[in-house]
Amino acid sequence: MRKRAIAIVLMSFVTLVIFGSGKSETPTSNEKPIVAVSILPQAFFVDKIAGDLVETVVLVGEGQDPHSYEPSPSQMAQLAKSKLWVLSGTDFERALVDKISSLYPSLAIIDGTEGMTFRQLEAHVHEGETPDPQATAEDLNIDRHTWLGWAQSEILIQNTEQALIENLGLPKDVLDQRTNAFLDEIDTLFTSLKQQLSGLEGSTVFVYHPAFGYFLDSFGLHQEAVETGGKEPTAKELANLIAEAKKDEAKAIFVQSQFPVFSAKKVAEAVGAKVVALDPLAYDWLANIRLMGDTLLEVQKGL
Image (tube, rainbow, N blue to C red; front, side):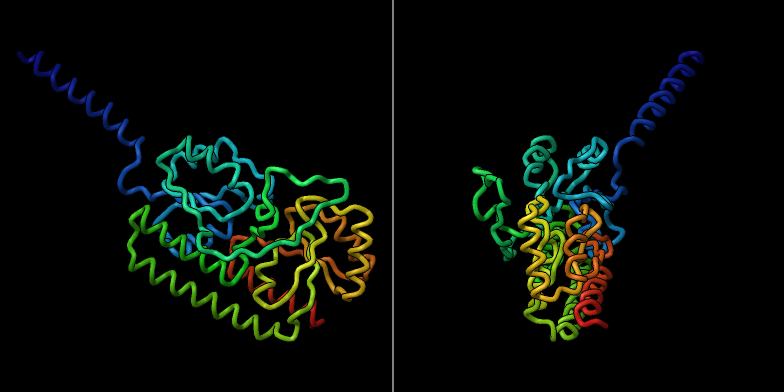
């Protein structure tokens, strides 16, 4: 009888070890839900709204180009663990959403741009280029860099808060307080910049890639891009652009780190302008908006 009792105790101990070690490898109720976002500014939005209530995964990391992005195997594994993916409207998402939703049907995918008014890019076809016959005119012309606009960023933030509450069950009162405080910060910053930049209203700002349209629209400024549709300009297009930059007395061409900028430098040299680096995909969105406004003011007003 004693041997049998010892055997039962040993079997119970082994069972506890097996199930105990297995349980530690599965998510517990204390683990934070994982939220996937497409670009770094969205991660800043989630951090401002949800703070330490969630863990954030960013698909397009620092220095990467969202136009040519493809997820790595490790990022696919992170998406598999995520509860929520908030879309930013960037181009790569459109080719990826159907694949991700079929692979991970339990992943909630929310369009952060829902209810937003999009600006249109000027229709532009490079010499010798045939437009995609499958793409509609609207698809070709929509400016998808929405997160830099005053009204558009606030819609993205409000949609993100709603998605966090509805899909993750996060406390509404806490998120409402944080979101409202964040929106107040944004309104204060843009109002201040609008006053400072009021003397520039109606002028043209030359950029390498057309990523700053929503930001410039907030202050009544016009964007003129060197590169459009991911294509470097032809010699003829470059000559026309240089002529236009000279006519407008362009003082600078804004470039971003995600793209080669040979053509932008060539235009700048031809018109005696400066090449000024800005990053529309920087994580600290508030600081970046302030930097963009201050840089624009400094260059355009010669301060």
